[in-house]
Image 1: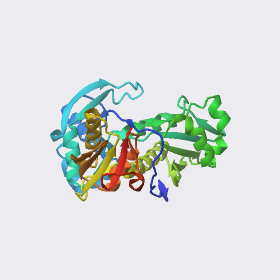
Image 2 (image 1 turned 180 degrees about the horizontal axis):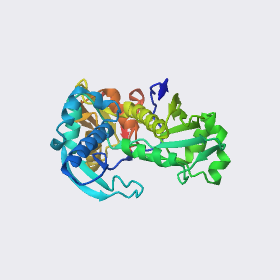
Image 3 (image 1 turned 90 degrees about the horizontal axis):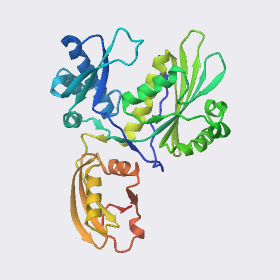
Length: 349
């Protein structure tokens, strides 16, 4: 499989809301039996999957310190159980081993080894997929029988990425064509995507070769930023796996926080704090941001409260985390009368 030119995106804020992703610290691994040796191997595999999902980077497992931790998966395991594999075609693996890991231990491991931690609130991605398999080009909807739909959803779940496909109903078909996605005409596709409220849009063109392999062109667009790359001569699973890893890695690079930050402090002022309940809301929100280790109230002036944030990351990490939703709205310090001096200022909605 040959991969060509993936540019890393620098994303701007978008109007859609992030959504919380469940199950970040658990994984399900198909297994042949409930034998202890097979279980140990599956738990180790599940730990790898969870670390990549929480860290947000598909290459995180190449770190030597993390490789050492993977040799002791039981140290991070909370519980495990067996389920029947719902895919009856997988006769060689009739069970699923469901493993839950300790969130605190996983986060601590990533912080300790200087890796990123991607919080559960993650951007929604809308995927427009066009396929050319010698039977003409067609768009895929969430209900399409194409195996590519299952593959891309499976990879999105594996990487902890909220991903949706268009309905391709009359409204969609009136707004976008397969040619628009194939070109791609990004402006047209973005306009057609507004109804879905996604944070990011990915346009995928999949072409089957006479050799049976697949070429894929992937375009990721967020706001005014976009990047296009190619994945050539891949099998059906490979073209989706590599493409989704690239999409997720790029998004995580923007929104995840570094485990080894500069340990800097940041002062911000939050306006529209009208009572103690809203003060508690603002403080809890700031404390739960991934780059923030500790939140301290420094000064109160009318409806304004100044907070000092002790960071495990940078000021940019905090701004990017806040941009992902609409809890705090940025204000211009120069245009705010009698503002408490701070590095940043926001209004609590």
